[in-house]
Length: 610
Ligand SMILES: [Zn+2]
Image 1 (cartoon, rainbow, N blue to C red):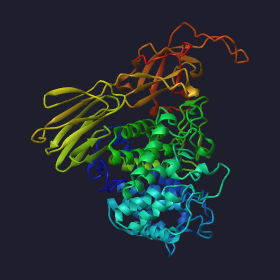
Image 2 (cartoon, protein in one colour):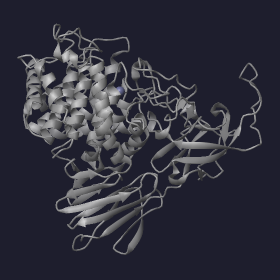
Image 3 (tube, helix red, strand yellow):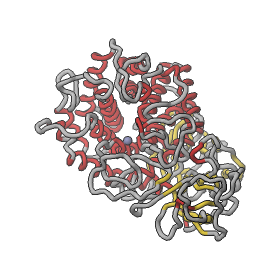
Image 4 (tube, protein in one colour):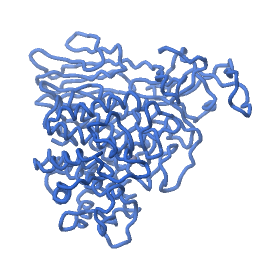
């Protein structure tokens, strides 16, 4: 089975890349673009920046201490995509491995001297994930041999110590290698890495031990904190350990952490991590739009975590969050041409970014960049799109559950289903039976989809958020059709008043998509608009990529001291504000942008006018 996650137990079991084939459509197009363009683009940049030459070892080393991991993430993507460039790149990596299995281009002469910042185990984690992908797609080869030697080296070196890495990821990688090979010491090593964290295992640093989740043991942690990518990769590994060791308490601990985090530390887009300082989660309700970090990698890590929790529990809410994050963080991060990327995904940009030639030294949002000094996000995009179909559907005891709607063909136990849809632009999803079989077919109804209906076998009925279950007495026959209709009326969304930074503002959502205003064309100045949520939202163009809302401009010139006793009132003359699906913004050059729009009455708009 070719899936990045293959738990040995759980309510759902994955359907891998061999069982789910994407067709042209929202995700199918991006998957194809990734394989044809993005991977070659990343490969070229890694060569140009000398990160691949580091493995050849005949030139002075270039790049950050963790640059090896970018090659490994690209290798993972190539493995899932069955990309012809893999063997040559893997061979370059293989030649750098030392006889005892050690492999790192930065620390080879000072092994394991900096666990806080060295990233040696982190790099192994990504290498192991690449090896797992290769094993599942292709079988044993040079890359998988390298990976087994690395994993054996890690077990020999770290099984009896108290050490761990400043950057988690090896935990989930080792569990997956255990799942792929059956070698139990890999699972035991992962379990020990999880349990020794927070004892503490690492030295204190300028950001505090919370930065790398070493301030509190995992079992006592109530909410995700510190560096967002680290926190979420760790949590994904903890779920894997919990599932494989049958540790119900540990699984429940992560479920509770997830619950608290989405309730108080997650952006409307699904983005996580609000602080640039330490790339970390903020405190509860600390979710500013303009200073949002919302790193692309944190979005990907959140999807990896939610997918694991979905498989373990079968709870549709995990798929809901994964969907929100896919459409509004992951799809946003990649430019429409597949060659530039957002690292940070803020919800407001006040000043148009300066166009940049070449590498981006920082992570600021505003314009996508072709490459970064720290280029974790592009290679993460590459491996995520390459394995994305494995997230679309899963098997349960008797049947199939479809989680993400995009044109695709799904096979399970003789049953072959064709998913046909223009989602997320349209809410109509057709599942056509191409080859008959038995079992339930369950379709996820997202939490926003109040009023959804399902039709099949001549009957139509209303369905609630969760799963809509279709069953056919005597089994499914070729030509049978199930139709899910999700209401796609644009809706005004109001934030919890505890989120200070956006109190008194509203956003527009339609289906799984968040919309934003972008300063392209003849838009009013975005810093000066207020909206009237009682007014209807109009579709501006076919397909709802763009929407129009009624707005007004704040009247009067700034007074020189922006704090007064009197509230300013908007001009009476209504204007039209154009909104675009957030993932499409930033494809027309430098611009300002905002998701949350202030409401023109005070006290703030209360209640959800739809
Ligand atoms: Zn990143």
